[in-house]
Image 1 (cartoon, rainbow, N blue to C red):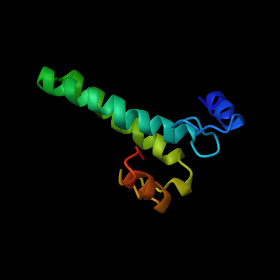
Image 2 (cartoon, rainbow, N blue to C red):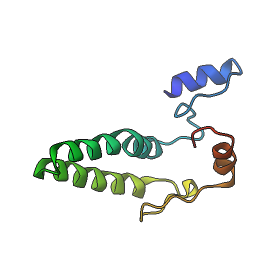
Image 3 (cartoon, rainbow, N blue to C red):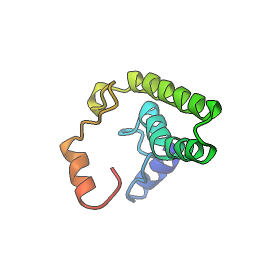
Amino acid sequence: FYRQGDLEQKFDLEISPLCNQKKDTIPSIQIGFMTYIVEPLFEEWANFTGNTHLSENMLNHLRRNKTKWKRLLPKQHGITIDNSLQITENEEQTFNEGETP
């Protein structure tokens, strides 16, 4: 991903999400992937299977994994350990313009 971002920057293109190594960190990428891809999938699986022991176990492991990654986040990202997200002014402007934060 970072190589793609480097090439986009080299050619003065807008850097794609998750490809900016000056902005994105491995922990933030992992948390985003788990939050927007894995967690909704696991929750739907739990609903589909009727909240089985397996689905509950999957969700519990996911939550613990996210907590560990959040501890590795640099302070400037504004994510707190209690799962709340403090949106920075820059992120709020991007969000208000209709792009994904």
